[in-house]
Amino acid sequence: MSLASGYKPTNLTLTETSPTLWRATFDNPPVNVIGPDLMRDLKELLTELESNDTVKVVVFDSANPEFFLAHYDLEADPAIAEALPGTTGYAAWVDILVRLTKLPVVTISAVRGIARGAGSEFALATDIRFASREKALLGQMEVGFTAVAGGGATGRLSGLVGRGRTLEIMLGGEDFNGELAERYGYVNRAIPDASFETFVDAYATRVSRWDRRALVDIKGFVNEFTLLDDDVYTRQSDAFWAAAARPEFQSINSQLFERGLQKNTHIERNLGAEMGRTFPKS
Image 1: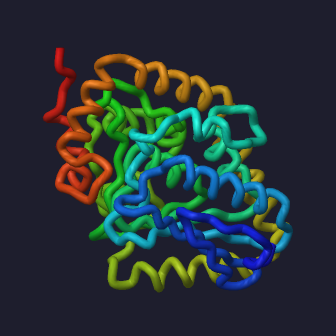
Image 2 (image 1 turned 180 degrees about the horizontal axis):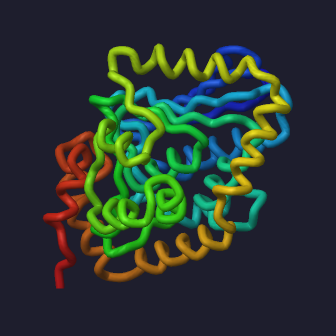
């Protein structure tokens, strides 16, 4: 695919650094929520990458230095996303994450800023996660909404950080900065922000120069030992949407929107802490 081939995303920018290295930059102001338009952009990109035999590495980053991907768009009509075409038959977000994990290319999340909820799940579904030591924040805050994470975070985190730390992350609903995320194994490495872009570019460029067949084979063998059955992710998605329909979830959601959710406000920047102060109203 050449960048002139008709792919016109609205919530991300695709840059062809070289024929073998692409960069997908999220750009959905004000805080990069994951809504139907971004999901459409991602599904179309995945469709291309599943059949492209030239690209070897894709780096995902953000145009907003404060937000990598804030979380799922809690204001959008979920039916719009579910109507988007997919190849797995799974719910829209699960379709994206399962396909992302199995792509025949190496995927790297360059996390500078906040990646919570579904934003964290996206990073977890990529092959490699690099974080800015000073500016990255990752977390799964769904427990504060009275819900389970719907995009497979419990399964993917368990393989990365172990059972106890997964429970700590999922039950606490708090934010993890880059340094602590690295210590836990939530991300591969935390890099000082001053050298973050240089490091990610150098690593991605190095990998993009290897033989493509070797990269695909290595990823395939690692996947054999590390991927869970897809059914696990569909069950978690069903559990999330069941919770989202309950009055407790809707009460918390309404309170947070009244306080500035999905805008570049104190509540969105500090959501991990604020979730512990927000409870359903009877």
